[in-house]
Amino acid sequence: MVTAVAVATLALAWPLADRLGTRGWTAVAVGAVLAVLNTLAAYRLVVWSAGKATVTFFRAILGGMLARMTVLLLAVVAAIRGADLPAVPLVVSLLGHFVAFLVLETAILSRPAVQPEAR
Image (cartoon, rainbow, N blue to C red):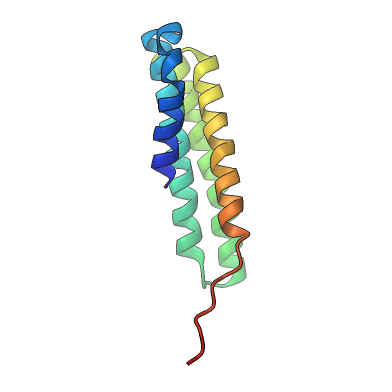
């Protein structure tokens, strides 16, 4: 589902491709990919820590968040300085997708758990 959201938003942004140019469009795609990888890593940590002790859960979630944000920062710096991608399209894409995935995550997690019917 995360990949589908990223693909859909990139398709919606396609009309801006000429205006952004090749490097700008590459920056938008890199921002989307980084957001997808961040979301999948967060999901993996939640799945791994589910059912474990509360301390383990919070260490995985909070420590994982710190690690993911550090990796994201390094990746953004590398993309901007190392690959010479324009900062604004990269950051706008990354933050836009990040917010979209947070909304999706909140919507999914706020649903009540489905209880199996008693027989």
